[in-house]
Length: 219
Image (cartoon, rainbow, N blue to C red):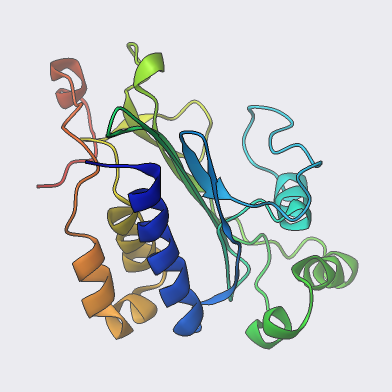
């Protein structure tokens, strides 16, 4: 049976590993509020979403300022992990990887507040941005409809919703992120990522119509 406690423990184990392995520069404490497992923002007064449009530099700055993330990686990327649990099952999730808009010196990220490092790049090389897209895995069965799969991956555009086989376990999410975006780190920590990627978060939700178009599937 899945509970907020078991999900929080899995997220905590992940964040502890990323921190101890010096993959993350900082991790936030985990929030368990009602049916939701997420993070404790350092400034909860700052709105999380200002619009439903594609993420911008200002969104990254706002999230960094608010501490609206589960982990800050050494290159400045953010991991945002939120799960909803109801009736002993995963009822929803938002799992996002937000690349940093600039290439940062990892030494500075270790030593200085992330916003100070970003402001330095904005002041000295404002146009030298990295055009990497954020990627997000959502599970929202209550909003499922044609063109809006219950489980889907969003990349490059808020209107891009690529159907996924099922809700995503936290281990599969982090394995995907590090396998594709940090292959050297993934290989160096292969036993951890492979072990954590072997679990499911819920039954298959892919419809027959979704099978007929490109989708994300795993066995």
